Length: 105
Image 1 (cartoon, rainbow, N blue to C red):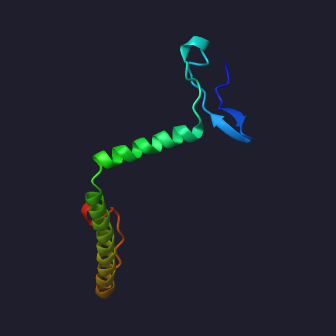
Image 2: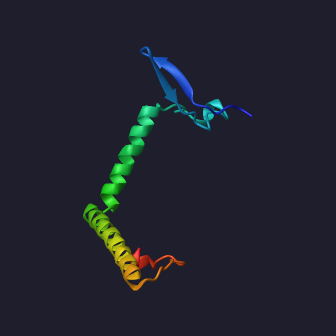
């Protein structure tokens, strides 16, 4: 089996890495553009992620959900503290055997 590890070349005194194109490993005529630098590949992926996130994600809605989640976490902590206080005042020790419902977590 052939080794499909990344190829490295020196260009202007700097080492550059290139992922192998799988079709290049099968035959010379299978792939004319066999190499792409890691930097160019990473940049293309980042640009595509940014384009898709701008197109499909509503930043306002995401911020509101994060804020709501933070508020919910604080409310859950307050609820647990109040429950512990009530248990202490009533002289009972309650051990939670089931997790709280998702709405209360």
